[in-house]
Image 1 (cartoon, rainbow, N blue to C red):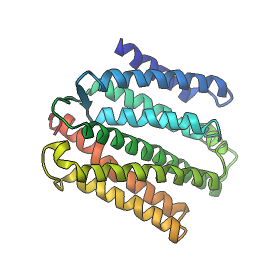
Image 2 (image 1 turned 45 degrees about the vertical axis):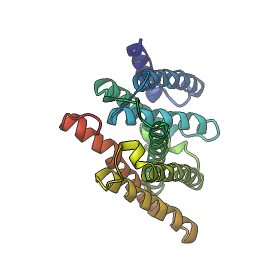
Image 3 (image 1 turned 180 degrees about the horizontal axis):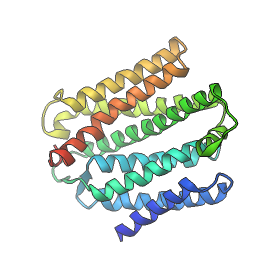
Length: 267
């Protein structure tokens, strides 16, 4: 049963990626079905009774599921066709990785209920900042296109031309970063306060903790700079992508090395 949901989600996401923007209603309908099929794969894959499956591919798959949902909702209010061109192929890749690298199952027996909440909030934080990173890349491409305008539109160019104005895109970006920062702060706080209940040991400054805190500091600096110094444009985009890159190293990067390179399970 699970393999069918994998295939349905991947095929429909792929179809949504290549359909022309003129088929907006069809794209919206297929996105909804694909998103629900993707949700089913996550449910069967991650939430086996009494266990939690954890791995770099699971994090990516969950992040792209939230990203597709965010695109689907925001696209009803703003034309974000350029975002579709980036999110849908990424979702196909994430689903494929989740099937190829299922990760390791962690028994929830004897673990505090805080553990599940900590993982859920961490995934939501990572997912929200993932869509913010996609958004930042689109803004960078959009700004570049404004300065190097040409008659040739092409696949990406036509999608960029349908995006809202840069000021609107920037407003949406900081809305997502603000929400992601709140969720990331809750993740860091729960990790510090409940470290012994979560992991059976006091907080240790390993690579994951260091990269997570560095990401938190970068996003905190960006929001403070926006509030007190009026940061925007290339400065905001640079901080967004740098913060996301460090978060990527903290969660997905470290799990990828452990599972694929070192062949080790949850640690």
